[in-house]
Length: 196
Image (cartoon, rainbow, N blue to C red; front, side, top):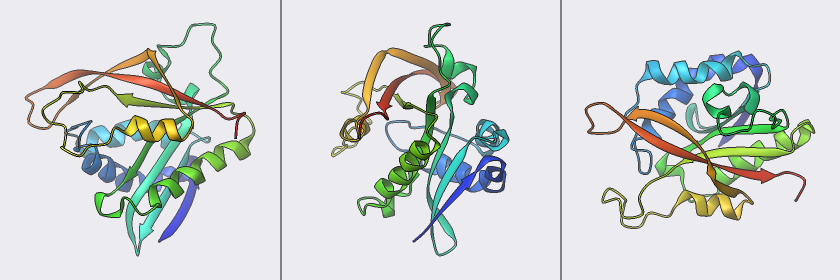
């Protein structure tokens, strides 16, 4: 396995690989996202244009099998700032866009290593006090939930993230087997970097 850290506008070279990962992985529960390459490249453009973004990839031979993306929250887009009060500073918050890993490579510590490299990178910058993530909210009794599904927020809790249900953003996207876009709520969780 080969890990690689790419920063700033070097992200542009890897947009298609990250977009393909997002399309493949987010089809799974809980997102059930029916994405396409155009929508994905549009979304990732803000990362590729930022001089402050980060992309951590892992390859098996030459195949990109996992990635973590991040960008200062202030640069993530207006939608992501809506839950914050107008006088609430966001300059000290770094946004973890996604952590992606193909199914065949899970449960081997690779995803954790990707995340750890990301958090270490953010800490070394010494200008961010908090890491923010958002997760889609699903009904606990959703019939599409896999039988042995473990909620991702349990992992985030173990890593020190605290969920804030009162801070949510709205996003509409097409689900697998849906005819059109469906509104979804995504809730923020935060990790305080002043604690180890």
